[in-house]
Image (cartoon, rainbow, N blue to C red; front, side, top):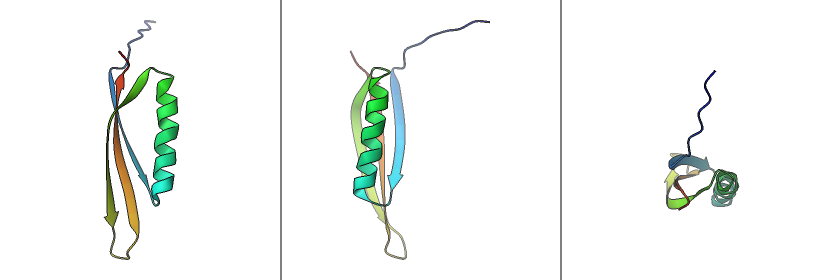
Amino acid sequence: MNISFELLEDKVEFFEAETLKTLEKKINEQIEHNKAILLQVHSVSHQVTIDDNGRRLFTAVVHFKAKK
């Protein structure tokens, strides 16, 4: 059995929620998890979409990079 450990350099994660507050909470939780594997936020992109019923869907893409 061969075990190999490699450091993650980049990681991109996608998030969605029905409220901006919930989206922010999800992102902050993942930031804390990724700190444990030595990743920090490199960039964030977000968007809001409104469906035919007038409901909003908030989405975000967060790019994490290795701490240097």
